Amino acid sequence: MAFPDLADRLAEVNDRIGAAVERGGHSQQVTIIAVTKTHGPEAAHAAWTAGLRDVGENKIQEAVAKMEAVDVPLNWHLIGHLQRNKVKSIDRFVLLHSLDSARLADAVSTVGIGRGQAVDVLVEVNVSGEDTKGGFGKADLLIEAERLTGLAGIRVRGVMAMASFTAGESELHRTFADARAALDVMRGAGHPAEELSMGMSNDYEIAVEEGATMVRLGTTLFGTRAS
Ligand SMILES: *Cc1c(COP(=O)(O)O)cnc(C)c1O
Image (cartoon, rainbow, N blue to C red; front, side):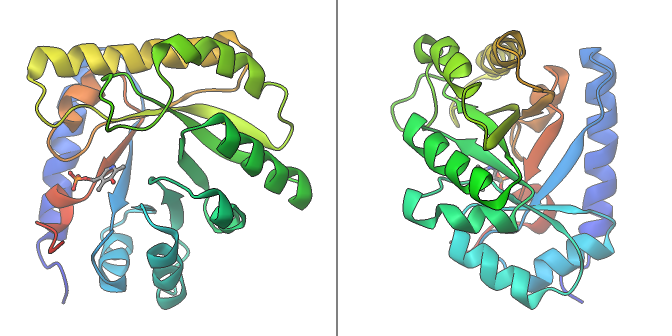
């Protein structure tokens, strides 16, 4: 059996999430997105067997190959950058976490209008301010939040953020609190934005304390990635 200790790892993660919700006081429900990137289809299958229903991939081609190899009805999330020439593939995912530019938003909206159903997206916010990270900076966020209300083919369900890998605890709290403020900006602009996708294996407890409703976990569930 692949990933024999997944059930134990998941039980521990659930305990830690429960404790973090208590400490943070936001009383939110938290959905675990099992990040299966670089692992084979057996990781997605193991996730299903362990009771997880949501999986995340950061590359379209890898995700689609895995979807075709897995015969259980998982919810697939796209958590990595989406190139505009692959935008039609978004049809196969329940949620795009990484809406990171105005041009991508326009392209995704065209897909949503074409298929007659808006595409659910999270707006990626660059709250850590690192140049290497994608997404909208604080300065652009309000303008884009308002502009996005004019795109009929997307539905903004929330925001996604990534913290710096080198941040200490207090900086992590600040980054995730900024992401929560970005969610308020989206709501203020009139979007049905409820989801805060933030927190990875090394920082998810702090993210949950700050109100994360979706955590994206790879390593802590499946072990170290080969690549
Ligand atoms: C790989 C990845 C994750 C999961 O990272 P881990 O540290 O293995 O939990 C989460 N979010 C994104 C966007 C990723 O690319």
